[in-house]
Length: 56
Image (cartoon, rainbow, N blue to C red):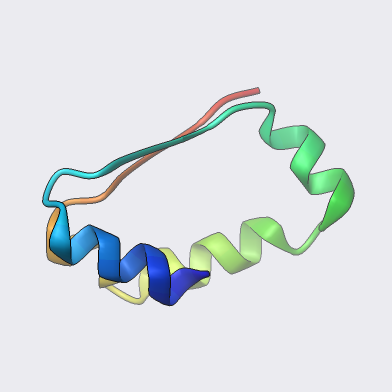
C-alpha cells in the first residue's frame, strides 16, 4: 500500500488523502498508526507534498 501511495504522490503533486472514521479503522488493525508513522517518516510523502487528513 505505501509504495502505491508514494508513487501517486510523486505523480500527483499536492495529493490530498482524507480518511474518515479513523478510529474505526484502528479496531481492525491497532498497528495502523505505527504503519502510517513509518510511511510518513520515510520522506516519500515529501516528494510530492502529500497531505493526509484523519477524521474521527
